[in-house]
Amino acid sequence: MPLLDGEAILDRMVSAVLKVRERLVRSTAALDRAGVPYAVIGGNAVAFWVASVDEAAVRNTQDVDLLLRRADLDAAKKALHKEGFVFHHVRGMDMFLDGGEAKARDAVHILFTGEKVRPDDILPFPDVSESKQAAFFRVLSLEALVGNKLNVFRTKDQMHLRDMLDVELIDATWTAKYPPELAARLQLLIDTPEGHFG
Image (cartoon, rainbow, N blue to C red):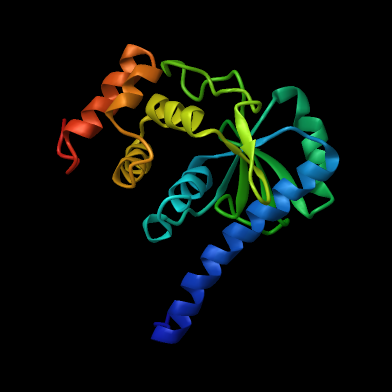
């Protein structure tokens, strides 16, 4: 496969970011029109909160994660189908592909309130009511988002939490908001700003 020139690569970089943002706005607008309660979660929610303080610190994300109540899944299917999204259940994950030929990366991933991703997670996902209305969509509240990131605590969740610490959205006082296990994870990130811990 021949290498692309620099301008073509730059165009692809910009296009990738714009496609995710467009998918986010299009999917949430469809749910809003249908009256389906939801909250933006994951990397886009982190980007929203970080951008509220420092746009230069925003990290791009490759997909869209939405929080729904499981009882609203059928209504969400109808609303998103009208916008060209195709429902799939792949490897235990519910998602809406952005068109019939799309890949899992070109999808809206669905997570459910009151449920855990893994059995050993400390807390289930919060309810969609723990959100606020932004300009184009509802986004998970900062406190609920931080709690979720501390709960799941994968490498990318730790990275997102560090981004929020770096722009001072959160600090050591936030440990009081969470159960001891989650508070200890936040304190660990605070105590190891370079990320070198076992």
